[in-house]
Image (cartoon, rainbow, N blue to C red; front, side):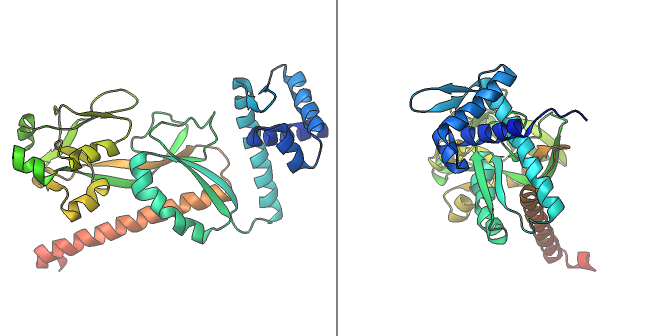
Amino acid sequence: MERGFGDVMVGSIELFCLAAELESFTAAAAQAGITPAAVSRAIGRLEDRLQVRLFVRSTRKIRLTDGGRAYFMQCRQALNQLQEAERDLTGRQAEPAGLVRISAPTTFGHYVLLPLLPAFRARHPQVRVEVQVSNRNVDFTSEPFDLAIRARNPPDSGLVARLLMQAELVVAASPEYLRRAGIPATPEDLAHHECIQFLLPRTGQRVAWEFRVDGDDVAVATEGGYTCTDDVLAVATLARAGAGLVQTHRFILDEELKAGRLVEVLQAFGGRSRPFSLLYPAGRHMPLRVRALVDFLLERALVDFLLERALVDFLLERTNPEAGL
């Protein structure tokens, strides 16, 4: 096989990635134990080979060009895979170690993922976790993420989706609002209420409210004078302030419901849920550190499912003792 890269070119790629991560030729030189001029020459060799400018340079800092950013993503992934292959072959990495980057929506991030991470790092102290809490869908081909969690699976068939949770939906409002406007008895009553709206970030469309009526799944279009975009947590804040009714995931409102700051309504028409799934690229080599977090999250999802199932079975037995016979 003809060699496409010499030792010098591979070294230049490593220095390029280091400079991109540190955003400084000087810092990269200090970490590599060479001079800033040597780093600059290495970057120059890459730019001459590629015929592309990789950095925009100024007297104080450097930043990647669009082409440089795309090249960095591919090079970083390739170098990581080489390091992982060496660790796998030599057995030097008995314990997961290194950085895992994960993106999660604001709801799942604040209420589910972030509270779990201390337990994960207690189990794997050498793994560092970088979390992007955002409702923006990430692009695994151009952004440095290993994993993402989303409430709706994207149409990209190149992604693996592993179910983490079926998040139950509830409708609630503040006691003050219900005293003022009354308590809806059926989903049809929502036409006479202030229903706080949420727009889907990708499409800008309103999210229909979901109910189960006589065993059938029903979507109800609602109206209201308040509209929130991007962050679902905003609708919960408005509901606490007495602005109106809201439908969202139970785990978001659970503490508010227990404390009486919000009151659940339309329980007889509940039972609907939306999935949260763990996403990662199909076919990509999964480093041990990433696999450790995947396994941890799936393990916790299984534990939560079994606990919920046991609770349901217990309640059924309490209401119908003969069911357990």
